[in-house]
Length: 79
Image (cartoon, one colour):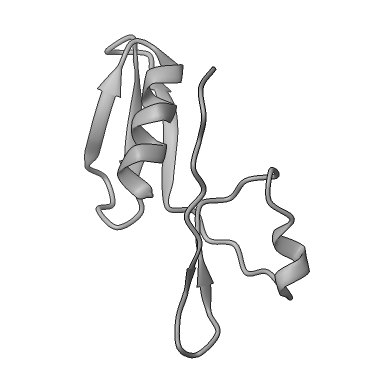
């Protein structure tokens, strides 16, 4: 069985940061403001999936022929 840990960080001003998941009822913490940290898109020229981080616009942070592996890398990198 694959277990995914969800890390939620609380700042002194009450701001909460975490990766989105529907496994945790985040709405119960209050009003949400959602910002994308990354994008996973298929590159037809290279025939592989690419992960791009919002913090590094335009740069490919990771790529692989498997979307599942890219999503796993994304979760690990952004946790």
